[in-house]
Amino acid sequence: MSLFGKIFGSGGKGGKAPTPQEAIQRLRETEEMLAKKQDFLEKKIEQELVTAKKNGTKNKRAALQALKRKKRYEKQLAQIDGTLSTIEFQREALENANTNTEVLKNMGFAAKAMKAAHENMDIDKVDDLMAEITEQQEVAQEISDVISRPVGFGEDYDEDELMAELEELEQEELDKNLLEIGGTENLPSVPSTSLPSKPAKKKVEEDEDEMADLEAWAAN
Image (cartoon, rainbow, N blue to C red; front, side, top):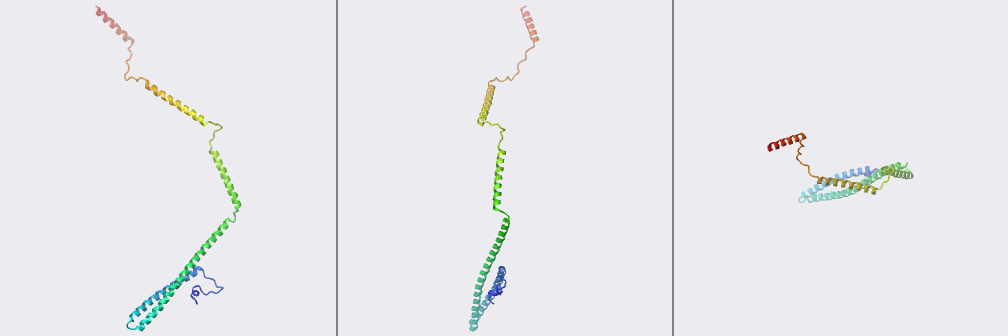
């Protein structure tokens, strides 16, 4: 039986083909087997080399036989290296194919789900619905604009005329304030001391009588 027959089985025409996962697993097992074979051959090569060196001067025949076996082992080792490279390449190709298969399977599953979601949708109805939504949004915007517009209750004023009247009132108030400030500056200051109180009328008459008596006494 060939190597590929051992890996994939000998199923006939009616046999079921192996899955990519099964084939990948078989290839990995084969890689492990060949790696162990490599280790074995490398050890054998070292042993034959030691034998050839040991018998190089004592027993040339034994040394030559050891070198021949060493060459055979090296040839087998080279063949295994090539086989491992081929198997590794095939395994990577299978892994990529398996990944692509899973991707396509999931994409097909998603496509079916999308188709089912759109199954009950009519593009014409969708267009009509979107047109109606747009129309209602425009109506709502117009209503909002009307509601937010300032209401004058039928009164229409000239903005320029109102501004002119306001400026006139401001100028009058300014002139009034300037006049009040000017009048305050021209008034005399209020005296700090209190004025003497006016004497009572009776006190004045008594003083006049005393002055008259003094004048009469002086004349005598």
